[in-house]
View 1 (spheres, rainbow, N blue to C red):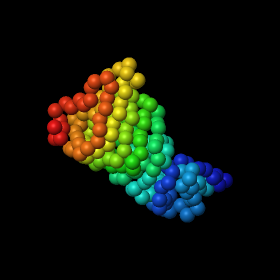
View 2: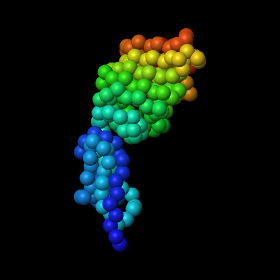
View 3: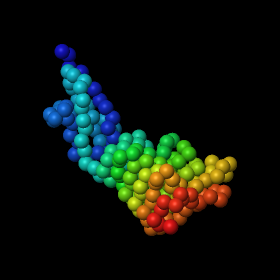
View 4: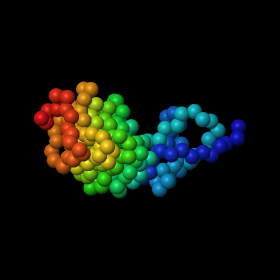
Length: 193
């Protein structure tokens, strides 16, 4: 069997990366934190798993979208990030998001969509088209600035939208702006009201 060298993107700036083939450590796996690729040589293509620290500083949209699906991640932005899709936390996943004083801008309809659990969204500014934060799952603390413009004023915007069993435990600060008029939509499910 001829060995094949391949690379796969797992996310930039991860720490303590270890690659496993089933339960065995892949000793020749090399991770490049600048590019986010791990490279290894193998003679088989059965499951490989990359394991890394659960705390990460994110500098780009691609890595942000990958780590938003990893349960237990503590995510901090290390730069302003613009993305064409929402930061989405899937059902069954718990993360925290510290904007690190930076902005997260989504050119899609929503900036953040939570279907899982977000322990906190803090320390920065969210920019969205129609929705800033959409909570279909539980959110602990919210303390960010949210600006949504209704697609440059052509539609109605909502800074925080909570529905479908979602909840927000506590809004501890931040400024919330939506144009032209709708600021919040709560479906009677927020303990912070």
